[in-house]
Length: 316
Image 1 (cartoon, rainbow, N blue to C red):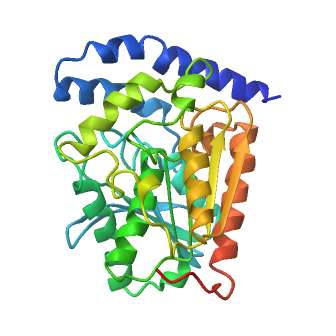
Image 2 (spheres, rainbow, N blue to C red):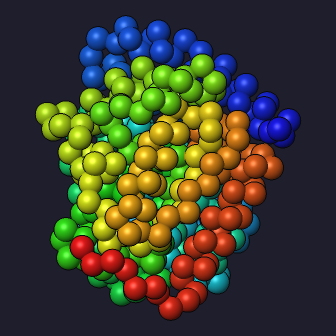
C-alpha cells in the first residue's frame, strides 16, 4: 500500500496535469502550441520548486558549447552526469534541482545537469548531440569514466540510453554505471501499458505521449535506435539500474528495454515498485517516503559503481 503522502501527491498531479490533458492535446493545431501546452503542464512555478539544500552550491556551465549547471559540495568524490526529463520539449536543470542537488549532497558528488536543446525548435538529433557533448566535456576536463555515473528520468532516461549507444559508436569510454528512472525508450509507442495503464497512471496519458514523440523525432523513424534505444544494440553498456512503477504507462518501455539489455549481456537491475507516480524518485525533496527510499538506493548504486574495480564488459 502506498503511503498517504504518495497517494496525496498522485492526486495532486492527476488534478493539475493529467485531467483534461489528453483531450486538450488532441486539439492542438501546431507544434508550437503543443510545446507551449506541455511546458506549462510540466514546469511548476518557482514557489513550488524546492530550494537548494544547505551545503550545495550551483554555478552555470557554458563551456565548449555545453550548457547546464554544476551542483557542487565541499566533499566531491565522484561525478554524476544527469539528463532531465520533460518529453524532450520541456523542463530544464532548474526544474529538477530538488533531486539533483540532494543527489550531490547524499552521494558526495559533483553533478553536471545538462540543459540540452528542446523540441520542436530543435528536433532529433539536437538533444543527443548535446548529451554526447556534455560527456566529452567531462572527459576533456580530466574526469575518469570510472568515476562517472550517468542518469536521467523519463525522456532523460531514454536519452541516457541513447547517449550510451552513441558513446560506444564513437569509440568513447563508457561511464561506470547508469540509472534510468521510468525511461521513455520506445517513441514508436508500441508498449501495451500505454493503453492498459492509462486509467491508473496519475500523471501521463498514453495518447498524449504518442503525440509528444513526433515533436522530437521529426522526419526520422521513431524506431531509429538513437531515438528509441529499445531498438538499439545495447552491447557494451555499463551496469544499469532501472526504476518504474507497475501503474505507469511507460512500464513496458522499462521492462522491454531491461529484457533486451539483459539478453545482450548487460548487467541490469530492474526495480518495479507498486502504485507510484511517474518518476517518483525525482520528488525526494517533497518528503514522499517512497521517493526517499528509492533515492537512497540510487545513491548507494552511484557510490558502489564508483568505489570498486570495474567489471569486465561485453565487447561490442
